[in-house]
Length: 513
Picture 1: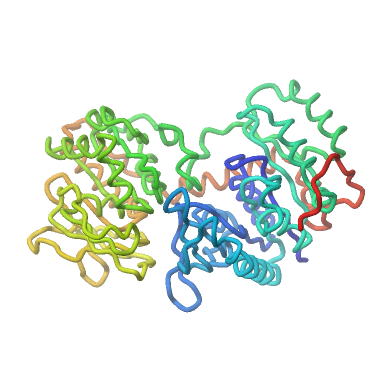
Picture 2 (picture 1 turned 60 degrees about the vertical axis):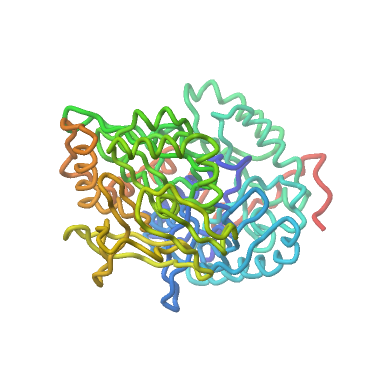
């Protein structure tokens, strides 16, 4: 078969990514050869994929997670177009894994045909290779100002003949109005592909919701395929840092007698914030994102995460007083960690003719290194050791260490023996993302952090496995789909397409031109 489905949403962060992953895991467990797809993603959370030519490329982190739900290694075709915002007005364009251009409102019309053609070709290839492809939309299909050039939502569904379901987040409120309005704003041909709805994040008595579901069916002629309950354990592999609350996950009680408090600076252009998810899986480790200088003073460990715009975010740090709080934390001998862009901020100087084009600017001066930005982006998996403990991660950056004190000890070593990152007292830095998913390295690092912070009662658990935590999360998504959705109806939709008798809901939009 060559079945398919588009999972659209009433808004961004309505639950498209997790529902897509849940459907993928459900199908995978049934023995179906299934793959995920998102034509265009806008996110600074990305994963490294080794392409067929052996070079590293990027796709959205959510599509890498969905690939795992399918039992697959990530593939560049799963997310052929990735837009990585560097400011409010411009985004880096990553096409089939490779950074090729910068898109702005002014040149998007010119670039769009090429992006759409690439996305359509990737989907066509996947549909010949897999029994089913579950596609995730972006934002809302009812962005009528963008419909004429859309190739991610209904433009994709129309091109590929895909039925669509619309997921809405009831926790936000107004879910019935947003679902009805989503359909009613589409033109007749688009409406003909919207087969029904899924409600996400419901808390309470389902019986109280039933009258609303029945009325939604009456006024749209479309069923609700199920209601997914609110689930606190679904927080790994967030597509965007805005999906996080202040505290990541649900911290388990300490294995020892004390907690370890980790404060992560929520940079304006934060990238790959998922790095700190691995820390948050450890019992007794409370990880929170913050923009408050006072919260850094109280933390045991402060983390400067990755950034899509290192120099701009460093300027923001200084303007907000956070830079002063970071340096005060380090001056007190308390642990500080910089990852990728955060590591670059710790340098004495940053030479950037590429990203910000501001030339040389002073860093925070907490590590005796200088960073120079190269036009060629480094995108590759990383394998190495930390004091003989195996470590795996990945690199995505333009900046590299151009000058370093030869006596400065590295944080890690590449597999070929080259030094990686730096450490000076309790200040640590690395370009490697994902390193803390390596359980042995994470435990050793947190043990050292606790000792430096004076948390002598903190003890790492001996058996925490980040990989197992991720698998449990994916299995939970599959369980939720099996238990709370009408999977028989969903299978018919995937196999046969949208019903032919779906009614038109006025007023509808004019046909996309």
